Length: 69
Image 1 (cartoon, rainbow, N blue to C red):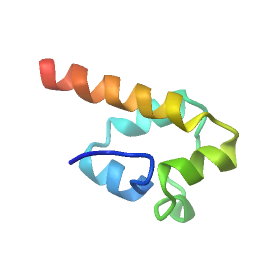
Image 2: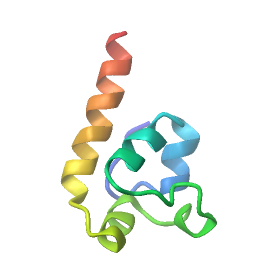
Image 3: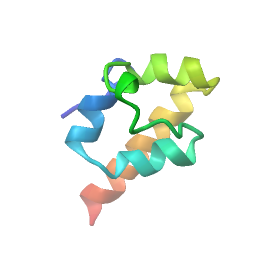
C-alpha cells in the first residue's frame, strides 16, 4: 500500500498499527478517536497544527526501516 497525505487515518492504521506510535510521537494523541478514522493524514495534521510533510517523512522512514528488517 502506498501511503500519502491523502490516505485516511483508518486506512493507515489498518495497514500497519505501528504507524499509531509514529503519529502519537508527532503529537497526534487522538489516533483511536472514531472521528479521526475518516480524516486524511493532511487533514489530521492541520487540526493538530502539525507539518504534514514531516509526519509523512516519519511514517515513510518507519515503513522503510521495517522493510529492511
